[in-house]
Length: 441
Image 1 (cartoon, rainbow, N blue to C red):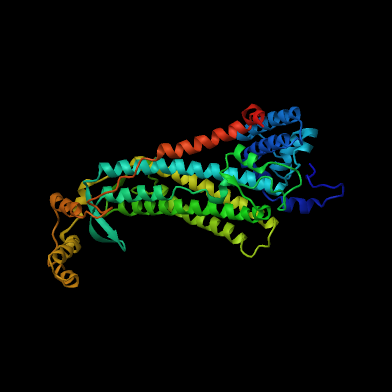
Image 2 (cartoon, rainbow, N blue to C red):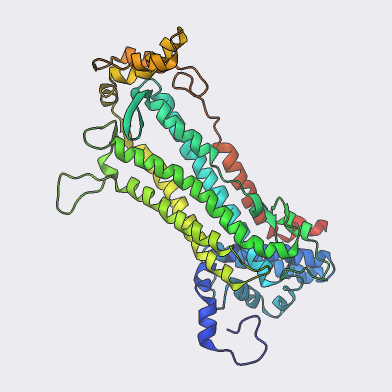
């Protein structure tokens, strides 16, 4: 199938294959969003009197059918990319759709809708995992365990304090949309258009928070938006990798604070005694993969000239792979955390009197001993096991904000995150309906 930019001259097939790259494959993930964005553009063209309402209604109906097929993975892309395939699937009437836009802003819009949907999905999954960890933290708030620094025992803590820290970190790293939530649609190839298309109207239809104003900036904004999404995903994956590393360490033989259920532990082809924490190891590794994707995308914008450059095409695969690995990691950790248990006895047994040294030094300082002198006096002369009562006394004595004796309770944010995802999904669905907004134009 000929590309949209064909001018009737013979095209080099080798060059076409090279420049198209993986777009026909990767764009199966973008086709739905491109069809929905095209619905918004058609409505804007009709609003401007550049399409008749019967034409616009017919186009929206056809685009809605394409969106449904794409959502089910049944829209075939036998063209250079999804944008070309959709326009050609509309037949002769599709030739009118491209007025007032370029493939540049068209591709950028589809990608931002994809990124917004993906990040809202990640936020919803984060909220579920954070809530699960917070529930586990409350259940084990009175289970003493060693707190660690430098992989060495430091002070007496609690299982609740440990798990609660990850519930908070997940809540703090819920994705922020930033530039992703600004519409580039209608910016055309970076210089705007003389066609009077209402960009604000299009942005509202698609559920964007607003419009990215400068048309030329929309081109540089492509890699900025994709890099921003990768950075949000990297923040999530950093937290997940640390939680996974803790589970691996705390479940190791000789420590055993955490027990991993045999039904999620993998084995060895040689050693029948092995039960391996592969799930957690892979999550830990995937964080490094996402960092690699993030670096690849971010570096594309360095030293780039203004305007669109084909270099930006290289970002797509990295962004989509980072998204797939982040969402998969959130899902598998939510599943795996249901299959771990806490060994209360092992946690308490590991708590010893030398871990009270800091608390002793602070109490001496409160009574008037200069802290540095108290620090030296508090060095323990012998090490003894702590009883649960003694361990909890140390835990409960620390009352500063967020300390072990004054735990923060994260507000349940599942509904907020899920509502944001549902609202956006409904917005996109409404955009593909002619009666939803067009009748008001």
